[in-house]
Length: 184
Image (cartoon, rainbow, N blue to C red):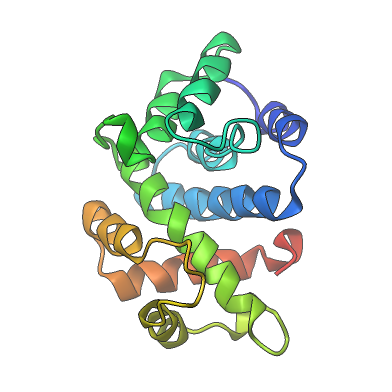
């Protein structure tokens, strides 16, 4: 299996945008936390989160993202489970989310982006100041972080089989525990 160091190098080679890099690191953090919760392979889940959007800068348009990235990952020998989960995080690929890891990636992707947006409007700009109730309130504001799909956040929690508030709480806590490394 590829190492996190190799995955991080690939992500950094393909992604120059700091916000996109931060997003992938946040999703990695949430995925690692869920892997621990479910007793799964932490490295596998973490690398999946870290690489899920690595090709987005070069191929931002569907279906190129994530299909082109999948070809790169296959050529580099990345685990098929990683590639399947990454393909499944985009509905338009029609790759079903079957494994718990597939479902967790979909559930964490949009929520991580939304939580970061919520933290950036706090006076201290820290994830420590974000509460579940403030995330839920911001979800009702269609003008706030309008590119984040509220429907995907809700459906992600449903597919993962967790209550939405509990999912938000869990991801918030994971991001808080790694806030220094994430710049949050």
